[in-house]
Length: 139
Length: 69
Image 1 (cartoon, rainbow over the protein chains, first blue to last red):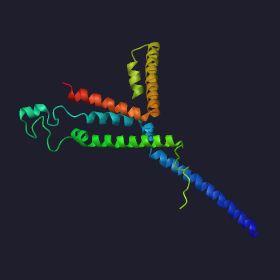
Image 2: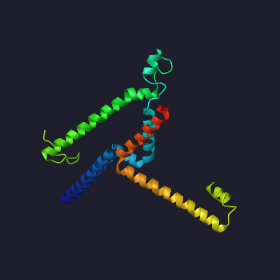
Image 3: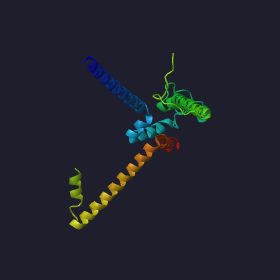
Image 4: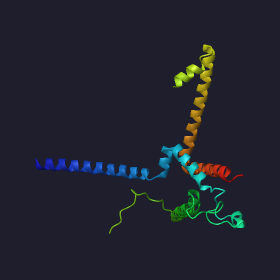
């Protein structure tokens, strides 16, 4: 009688472990999907295309309010006058002066790191292991 | 609204002409829908390239609108 009950409990525990593993795999897959930027572009393609076009438009600085161009200097213009960058600046100046170099630097670093990682794994001959396939290291 | 516009625009035509005009409009709508679906598939196939293309379109437009005299 007791052995039957123990077997039943073992069986239920095994089932629970299997369900837990399935849930965890599903959770990992969902987390990976939600952190993938391509997923959002595939889901909302036109929103991202419009945002990209608007961003490209904003990145081009205005011709009249440039950064101390030669024409402004030749005219002997002062800050605040037309053709000379005012201290506050505009959104496009902020983007081209601060945000764009930062984004380019971050993208270059990421691409370089990705490239180097791929190169090293290719040379080692071992395929890159995913999060779930990573073997557990003994402590 | 679409129904009213369609009725008003084809009211002066004979039934055959109205049918012909409506079918040609339907063909245009179908071809536009096919085009957008193909574009969506191409975007999904290569999101990075599509985003770069959109950024390039914005940059070129901005250049022509803001900088070109």
